[in-house]
Image (cartoon, rainbow over all chains, first blue to last red; front, side, top):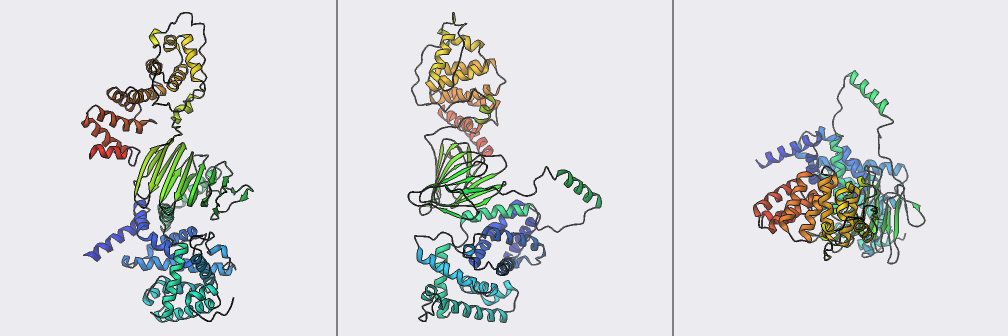
Length: 196
Length: 416
């Protein structure tokens, strides 16, 4: 009964959103807005284009929502739209050779109350910028968002084996970069700081 | 979980400490607006085939309306600081202890970022200008054009304006928000406030605390809540600042005792900036003469002068004469409100005040002072022990002004 109610309410929510009902849209955002904003923020950092990227996610979501057959899978559907949108953006930046532009991804105001953590954040997203789009996203989903391999497979559309392989590769890639960074190396507790 | 996963969790926590989790209420409020707007425009709706004649009609309408209908919001240019450096959406403006920085828009609006503050323009086009106040204080002077929506996001609050002067202070650590309005009206929405927000008029200050989920409204020293529509119509006879209502009224000669003879030749001239001279001029000409023969502008100017100087007999006489001689004018309706306020605040006559406020609401149910009239009517009915009427007014008020200035008062009347 509970599942039925949940399914029905989600179906109605989706229909309302697609029909342009502002109340349904607001309810939908209350349910998924925080998740979308947080995941985009986590994947890209304190990006100055955060609002634009979230808007791109919204547009892609609204365009794809009519193709969702099972409302129970809405959570993964939303995550997969975020995944595809952010991946496209990262690839686009890479092609435009803008990935390493620090001002794109780093907080522009260092929080003087917490300079140490701000520095770690800067270094971390610089490291992320050196990684490929998929590796970056897989690393964050796994180690920051604590998704399981199965969940990541659903979100990315890859097999579990592929996800497992990519997680291993992304982790090694990050560790290689971190070892060359005094700040990140210190966070990892690595003794072998290779130098910057 | 491996040792490295623990270390990654440590990095994740530090990153989160530094940049937050991307789900701050102000940010989510912005996103909700965007999402609802996109959904309303039915971005996700499948395109359907349309008849050829409909397409042709659309094409013709498009060609005809290209010059009339703006297709996309045009960016609004702005500069930052004394050097007028070109501004870019997203750039933070952080001020130090001694410095303050102006964000100036090409159409004349200005936002002053006070010392020890951090703010940024997150959107700037002719549809909306959004400013995020991370911490500190921003003073705004907005030149509204009726088209651009101006918003300041401060923590879980957002302040929306059309054309006004106000100041927003936001203390991140304590979660305290303060909004002072010196001119115009703003709408404050956010945590702890009602869903529709608090409509804040000139001379009022909103103090809200996000951590305690509380807010309160107080009067500010700079009161300037003149009724805009009336002033716009009246031209030279601008209503002046609010009277010092607490000032003791000093009744002088009443209108009926003023000699009218020999004053007919005396012209009545009233400088709105010199209330004393205005009253002297009126007395020289003769108050009954002005009450009976003065123009609408004369009577309005006279009541303003009397209100400023605290001469409540002349004030009431001018307004009653105005209502009698120009009953269909907008000022006659406003006069009813002013008479009610005078009866309530100066004469402490709640019965008379209730009559005037009722009269105003009958004549101008959607007038510029209607909300305040409802609020005062509630108090007046309470003052004369008419709880039944007070409840009816409170119910009407809550229906008409959800989230209004007197909402708490209305709820207290309904649920004492």
